[in-house]
Length: 446
Image 1 (cartoon, rainbow, N blue to C red):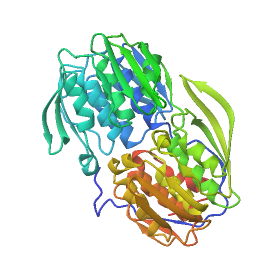
Image 2 (cartoon, rainbow, N blue to C red):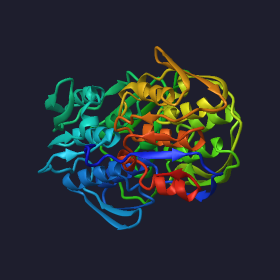
Image 3 (spheres, rainbow, N blue to C red):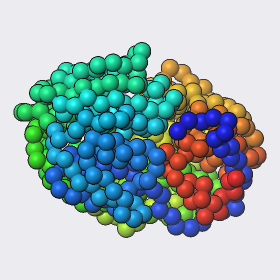
């Protein structure tokens, strides 16, 4: 999908009446990607319910088809995958096009790296700018070959998987669930043990779902904040049903909107509450947010709950760098919340935001500035001066970044003047139906 003059979708959000109601945001994107990939690598038929049917996930499903698995939709959010087994991918006869999805592209690179096939990976203009070297370096150590790549090891990449994959012990240079997951997926086809060591624990959905499909995975503490993950290679993964919980990264937008719009009272159903994904909820509670977990439960190894959220007066806080892996996608909307808090909010250790769909750190700062909020960037830290209010009135450049677009629209619902975005088309990559969901709660977006 490309953003051109013909496909631009400008939108404006205006001050809303109280947001009220109960909604279920789309299924978790991380779980959805992994369910398709591991279903394709398993033996038998995997059924998935609640799958996120956004463009990013659908691109992963199409990649699994081109690699030889049978992937079919049987109803809204309901899919079946007939897998080919570990190492069973066939060489695709077309390019694997991941659109805007860095997660899908990088995880599938790992899965392909353990198979004796060659595949071409590509994406849209935004994804072509994102770095792939951090993924490719460990995969090459495991026996894969980068046949060809654009300058700086960027897309398009021609990757030849290993005929005889080599198990490695790999310490990730930066906290990254995508790097960890790519190495583990490649390690499925390798003999012996593949080990990933991370200095900061990142989202553990790959380890959890590998176990759900029958792999032997051991997770141990490593240092004060890290983990050591050991995978025993060459398992026979067995098809297993997957229920996809609601995505906490998507829930973040109606959640913050409910906190900021006076009089709001919203329930978000079935939200994943995995502690490695709930850094935003922790931070907002520290700021004074009224977020209550009800109907707490587990499904498929993942914790979930309904979240009741009520409008709250927020105060500025300091967010430690070690929390970043648990909320890396939520900093733009946290910055919006910080603008409406009273006092200074300091968000530390945001280097990873510079290599998201956009330079998300700079784009977030620009989002605030154009709407009259004081924000500075010092190294990898962002400092927001909250005044309990925001003037608004700005036109936000989204840079083809869905989270910047949604964060700006949330801001407009509580600002003194409307907030507009130049293009909201890319919201569909992660949150199809976002505008309709927000309107259903009472939001004025159009």
